[in-house]
Structure formats: C-alpha cells, structure tokens
Length: 340
Image (cartoon, rainbow, N blue to C red):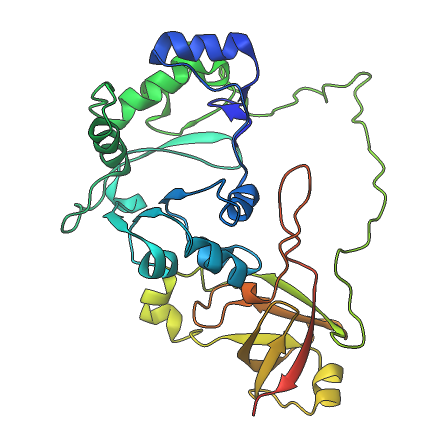
C-alpha cells in the first residue's frame, strides 16, 4: 500500500519516517505513492514514464485493458520480473528478468489468518533465473546504492521485525514448526490467535455497525447495452493463468474462453450452448463460447479473466473506488450477439 511503510506504519508519520531513516540511511518520502489505478492513468499523462513489474500482468488483469495497453505502449522503459513470459512482458517489456517461483525460494508466507509460516526451497532455480531478493539487490547496486548484502531471507525478515512493532517478536526460531500469528510485539511474548480476544475492542463487548447507503453503478444497462457483465475466476485457473495455462491437466478441463448466460437470455438471443458469441461494450469486444448456466440471473452474463487472447477486461470500465482504488469489475454494460 503506497500509504504505509512495512508493518502498516503510515508514511506521513514523522516518527515512523525517522525510524526508517536511521536504519536505512536515506530520507523516506513523505508523500503517498501512486495506487495501481493511478499508475495506469499516469501512463497517459507522463506522470509514469517507466514501470518495474514484479509478478504482475496489467495488460490482462487491469480494467479497460485496451486503454492500459495503449498506455503501456507509451512507456519509455518497462522491466518485467517474472517466472514466465506473460502477456505484458511479451508485448511491452524492454528488459525481462527471470525470477523464482514459490517452490524455488526460501522465506515466509503470511496467510489471511495472520499466520507467518516458513517456506523452504524445494527445487533449484532453472536456467538464468535468480531469486527476487538477489535481483533487487543487484539492481540497487547497479544503480549505485550501498545496500547491505542480505545473505538470506532471514536477514531481510529480521530487519522488518526490528522496524515493525507488529512483528518485533517474530523470529525464525518461533515459526519453524507451526508458524505464529501476528501481532507479536515483544520477543518471547505471546502471539495473537484471536485478533480481538477475549471480546471486541469496543466496550461493552459489542462491535459497531456502520450503515451503508446503496450507490448505483457507474455504468448501467440500457437499450444499446442491455446486459450486466460481471467478472471473476474459475476453480481451474489462477488470476491471469500465466502458470495454470501451462498445465495440461488444467487446460484439458478449461482452455478456451467462455461466458455464462441464463437460459432465458440465451433463448432470446438465439444462442445454444457452445455457440460462439460476441460480447461488446463501449470499450471493446471479444468472442467466447456460450455456456448456458443456472448460476446467473436473467440480465446478467459472467466471464473469467483468465484468457489472454480474449480478454474480458477489454470490456470492463476503469472507474475505481475513490478511497481504495478498486475498480468496479462486477458491473459493466454489454450486449451479446451471435458471432458471424
């Protein structure tokens, strides 16, 4: 998050910045950095002239993808650090740095239970690939930075733990077997299995509810685009499918782009299951196979983001929540036609 330093410490807090300055020896900028949606808009007005991507594929995963692709084409320089040559790297990168997968690195994973667990290298690095830590350190040295060597992942973790109060008491000897749940503010102190135990933080033991007023979507269906498009993921693929599209056991189950539509809407459009159709929005169009499903209501169509050759994000709009920058992937207006 561009508003925080490690451990959810606000970047606009002078005491926090001073603590990191004393450890790093460099001034920490006070200004908040760009969110991802702001980076994408910055491609078009010269605010962003170069990108260094680590495990990211914005040409496929970001909304209004034609607009994103146009912006990526304007960049003066793009570095892609990844384990495969995904869509963004293949089309727009000036430099590709082969990196390591989860099975080829040492360190920690933190899950949504706040449990920090050890990860150990299970396979050697292939070819010219390097670990992410080594790549970043080599990059810093090439740019003239005087960084420590950081000989292993534990040395990086210890620096984070020294600087972040939530992790002060988390050291490798405590996470070797079963992991540990942060916050752990003191070395040797207990971890926090229940974040608000034994009762919610708000007295007298009750949480506070916040009423939310319904806000209409930015883009609603009309006579030209009468259907709502919602997007998501399937059981078989992971995000932009950079990894999963390379596994025959998965592609045997799901390789070709498809969309889901209700039986009522399919009948009205003259579509049978398996028919090739065009999905069209104000921003672009694609072709995908029809899948008639009882999982979607009449008036709604659904499609996954996994298919690089027929990107559903060509159709989505890029208006984002003003507070957190999350795009409205779930509501875009489209029409569906039988493909010629």
